[in-house]
Amino acid sequence: MKFYQLPISERRKMLLQNGIKLNHVDDDLLSELDLLSENVIGKLTLPLSVLQTAIVNGQSFQVPMATEESSVVAAANHGLNIFNQNGGVSAKSERTGIWGQLVFEVAEFSLAEFEAKKPDYLKLVNEEFASLVKHGGGVRQIIAEVKTDLLFLRVLVDPAESMGANRTNTILEFLGQKISQDFTIEKLYAILSNYPSQYTCAKVSLAFASLTKTKDEKIGEKIAQKIVLLSKIGQEDPYRAVTNNKGIMNGVDAILLATGNDFRAVEAACHQAASLSGSYQSLSNWRIEDNKLVGEIKLPLAIGVVGGSIKSRSDVQVAYRILRQVTASELAEIIAAVGLANNLAALLAISTVGIQKGHMSLQIRNVLKNLTATDEEKNSVKELMQKQKRYSETDAKKFLQEIREENN
Ligand code: MEV
Image (cartoon, rainbow, N blue to C red; front, side, top):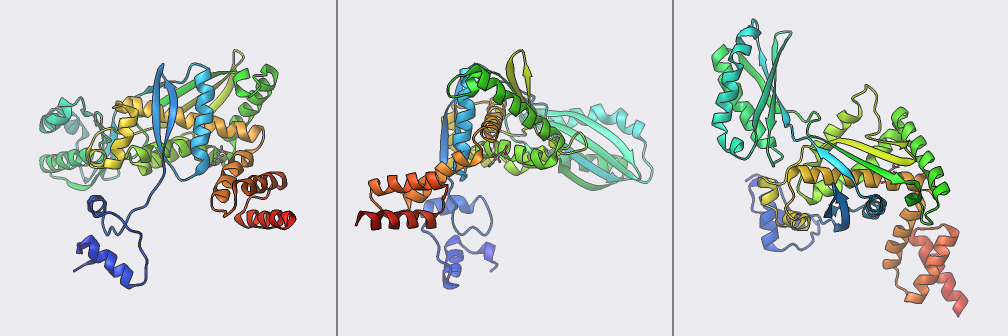
């Protein structure tokens, strides 16, 4: 029997026999996980966090995030807090559909003949996939092009409330077979394309004073000017742009993970969206307009809120209870808003105290948690770590030893 054919308990046993110690996982959970992937032997855990208030299009949402990077939720909270003081985020999601590609090898091909038949194909496929149409989706468009003995069809599928990857591939294979027969041509491939689609835009307009703790208008304006400069660098310098976008994806991926969405697909589409101009640029943009700091983001978010991979996961269902049954458009708007919030928090930190201050206070918290010491000793260690800007576990142990020696 091949490894993947073994029951999960046998697979775990094999690893144990090879000296690999595994963590205990409940049998029910193991069986649930076994259905999700191949060669499953255990589970990986991420913290699930919740953002208390994200005001998007005048509505207040609680937002689930799954991430192991300690500063990500704090950054999203910080950014959203500033957005909320300014009336929240306005966002708009286009649910136009996702692209699929059908490619055929053709020696001679009459594009005109295909174009004449196109309405019939659209009708046929929407009849065949009537349940998708019933849910508000369907095949919207077919674009045909012949390039050096290859016929390229781009098929736009509106997946309604789902991500739509499986459905799109099934539709493409159905259409591929039909067209192959009708024109006696051979299909080379049929697969969805993760090319950017389902774009979502989010925008905020922030009073300068809201950018500072002290609500000082003048200091806020200076910070806004620095953020605009950083944003300009992100449009011109790929070294900064990639990092800027990593900060955005911190928030985006954490929600995608919590809601069972395909973060790899969104990541791949975002690479292309960032490169649309021909050079890699920031996905966000900050400018000063009418004495306000205005931030905008535009992300391709081919996400869903229903479908097999979402419904079958009890952990993911928690996220939807937190979100209170949002639509796919609403979820995309929330994701774009949080991506922009993470971006603002990063730009604020970089242009003021530097990124390490916030990161390191979380690092200190983690190090202290693992230190065997009294609360009083931990407080003294914390003070020394902050004062001397030394943040490792070794530093903490050294400080603890010094404190104890001094007290004896
Ligand atoms: C760290 O995870 C993300 C940042 O580097 C993003 C940025 O620099 O904009 C802080």
